[in-house]
Amino acid sequence: MGLITPLYDDLWNEYVLWSALVGLFTFGWLYHHSFYYTAKEGETPNIDNLEVGVFPKEYDNLKLEFAWFIAPLMLIIYLTFISWAPLDNLWSAASSEDGGHYGNECAAGESSNLMFNDDTGLYEADCYEVFGITGYQWYWEFDCFDLSEDLCAVSTTTIEGKDQPLISLKANTAYLAVMDSNDVTHAPWFVSLGIKEDVLPQQTTTQWVLADNVENFLLLCTEYCGDDHAYMIAGVSVHA
Figure 1 (cartoon, rainbow, N blue to C red):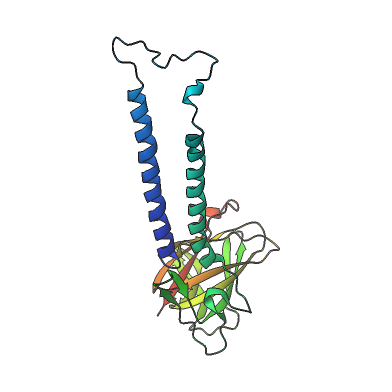
Figure 2 (figure 1 turned 90 degrees about the vertical axis):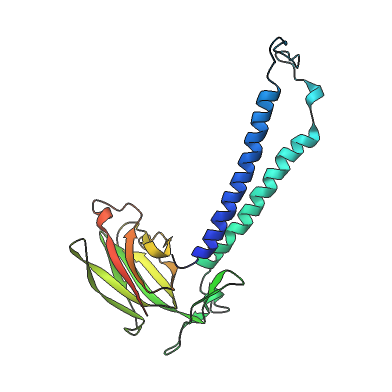
């Protein structure tokens, strides 16, 4: 799994941790009160002398009510905040002013030098290359624009006995995919990179594609687009 997977892995682990802690606290509290406030044999079942329609004010605790509200709210705000890290790294727009995490578009002969920064947990690059993707019912069309064949090449490959389009990219390179649709809504999913983005007709969408590892994988459509949606497949090859 390439791209920002380390960030998502860390985020997933933290969500699992907090889910376990909240679950243990909540169900522990539930089971404790379920048994503690259950009438013992020979005791009056209504040990709190509760009356229908009468709220037992002696049990009203404003501090506890605020704690039940503020503590979960703080946890939700914290989890929302840490969730921005992978989204920012994935969706940060290419900017002519600062270039985000990936610099500006590479000039002729300039190398992207994509690498993972262990200190920040983010991928960074000196610059990025641009290629195009257009969705049709029901196939993908790639456009390498003016890139050299070493950086981007379009051909075909055999997938499940059928000829399908293939795009070849260079490892350790940051790409910005400029995407659109010729007919209905599609959603290219770079399976090994774990990224997808909807593309709509008459609208241009961009998606960072960080080719960090040498590998071959599929590009699928994850937005239902008609009869042959399930067969809308292309190949992606990342070479050294």
